[in-house]
Image (cartoon, rainbow, N blue to C red; front, side, top):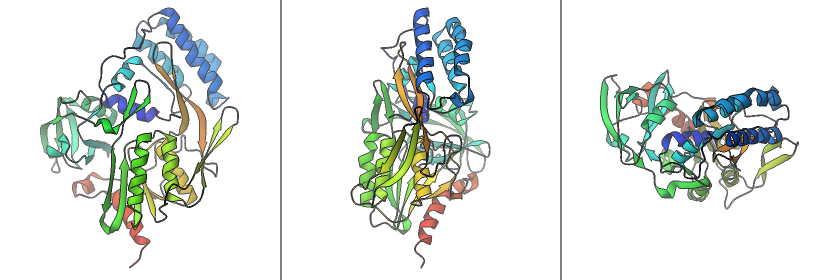
Length: 406
């Protein structure tokens, strides 16, 4: 099962590579029609909502077929397909072109910058240890203003401009804590092959994983995407923290990924089988996701950190653990993109990502379009970051401490 539209977006803008060798040009009229019809038909037969979210799907066929036939270039053709899919107004729905797939077939790089929009500015919230950003002296609270001389207009814009081949340099401009402008050069460093997994043929995903002990004997685990190969690392981390006063799982900025990892994660925190989520499909077939005790469960206090970039499997895990009462959620309301989806290869070599299941908590709460609402909302501010404080993380530590009064 693949639930990764946001994951794919993040890795698209960060990846680099050669052209996808198995793609076929969409300029051929017959190939374009075959591809268009396959996209329309898969949605028509498999979309989780038989009412198509209120959209007349047959009318969409008649509206966009001539536009797709008239598309002179491949990028125009895929734009038409994605415009049609956007009519459904749901997440996990997109055609991923061969050119985008080509970028995903190559290695992923990082400069080590963690970024968020705070009060309208692109603020550095984290720098990876030993990264080029950390070595250049960039710190949380600084504001990224330009990349290679061009102003950055959004988080997505910044990620695209920071992406590039491994070993290459990128110039950045930023404001320090006194709002003085500085310029420096960062190196794009390849992520380790040990941090890579293949979602399907030609689509490679990378994830970073971190676990450590914080003050007051609090365990901390953070990872950047739900990918199967991280499950053993997560399991080992939790087992090593069995004597901790509490554990914090940091899912801020985590776009989601593999449901199976989320289910196995949950099994580390229950002593008995526990119902997590219901997936309703087109034919009213309900799939029950249940956590089964995995090894020696950790039964102490658990806090989950989320923000507006936490999506999909991050939301499903957080919502379930919150509703059951097993975890306390802190941060910002999540993005609200939680559907079960699958990937299908198209005649041109592109892939269609489409949602076949709607996720609900055991009490019937739908996350798609709503998000996970934290038990305690805490915002990051630039001033607190400049002073070395992560307000959301500190709130999580304080919550755990409150369970052990002096």
